Image 1 (tube, one colour):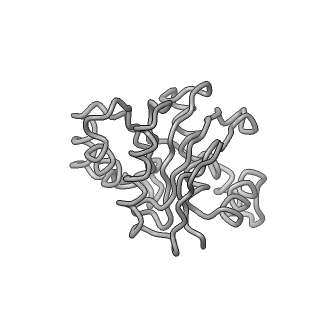
Image 2 (cartoon, one colour; image 1 turned 90 degrees about the vertical axis):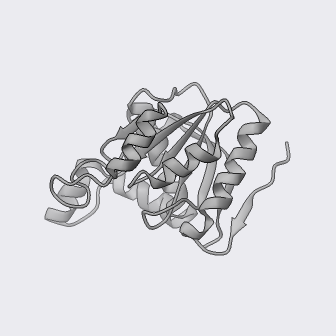
Length: 191
């Protein structure tokens, strides 16, 4: 099998429109029924929803857990939440699969947990975007929005705004992390 990978010169939100275009083209090739998109404010998920209009694909938005930015706060903007819900897009608001409660211990006592080592390894080797793709695929699987028996496209980014990476992933639940497979990288920053 021969596939094309698009590499961006640098990470960040400037790549969002191209990532969405590339993911849309991959959906049109077939074999993908769900797209999982990391979207803190919901704006990127709304953009993906609009771009995929007319295609038979389910969009799943994954956002930060409540209290991520500050105690009790919710980063998902109300207007975007309403738009996504009106379109039937499930919103997964959950603890980050690759940090979770371990981050609290690291902040309090220093050091780093095994889960944070996994996150940092993915980040260092492949970039923040791919780490985010893996993470949101786990979170969507744990929420029951995608199955560990299907390939999905995951979209992730660097810097909390927009996306710069897309890949086809066979997700896994958090407790079966090593069953996950990154099956195809569609695009990513070269770093």
